[in-house]
Image (cartoon, rainbow, N blue to C red):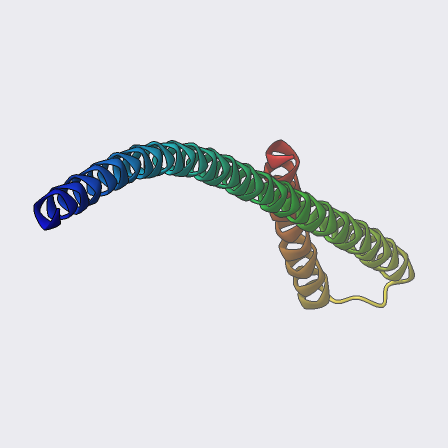
Length: 150
């Protein structure tokens, strides 16, 4: 009887161990499928992260280009304003010099008629007038150059 009992216990123990081993196999298979699924999800998340990074880089690049274009337009605007300012100042200078020339020549004519000027005075005034006229010509040339730049 003891022998039968021992064999029965051994068989029972073997069957229990075998059934438990099969359950672990299913658990292992289940955990393997979970690991594979987790890997797939990780791959999808990596792809989404890479796509988001690409979009961020593209947006950053676009922002840089817009900033560069804005700086370029501001620089062009500044240059235009500077040129117009220079043109206006040269025009004022021209008007002032032309008034000066006409004033000096009128005064010289009046003084010549009255006989107040000596030949040396006339030469000095004419020299002064020629310098002013040369200055006017240079200013006109400068004005033309600036207007061409516009």
